[in-house]
Length: 196
Image 1 (spheres, helix red, strand yellow):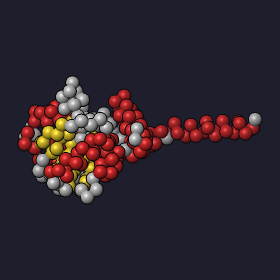
Image 2 (cartoon, rainbow, N blue to C red):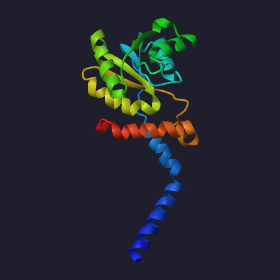
Image 3 (tube, rainbow, N blue to C red):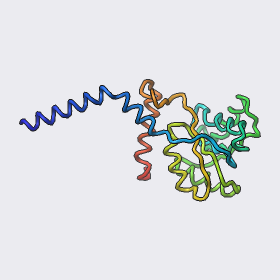
Image 4 (cartoon, one colour):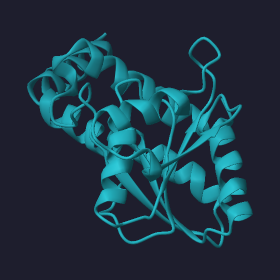
């Protein structure tokens, strides 16, 4: 009985300690998802699909505007009423002042970041590009970078973070969208090594 009481007390102390320091741990867990670098010159910026707010394509356009890449390859599976995401993203960027010539639309059939990586890397090789900026939402950079490295052997890749309005590493728990983004990305991060 004494052992059970000690165990219960230890659990309560641990839970109390976590509650008291939860924001510290939440920040750490949010920051862990981000693994990006400043942009460097590359042959192309690759804008990944999966951003419904348009921040990734705008980041890609800005990288071209600043001379880090001559063009942005915008991929996109047909997830919205059979319209490829690239066909929605590029006009969105054009409406925000980026020239259409900054972008190459690259519709594809991919339903995971792993499938997306295989298809994109094959296209980069086909076009003879040797270096690329991988543009994705900040919370997606660690996982996307790890997946793309599996296929990008011989290509120089720099992962560039696009800010996401719904996710902030230092405050994701304060909004419903932030909590959902955090939960989905951590679930995918933990299950990706198992092919789930």
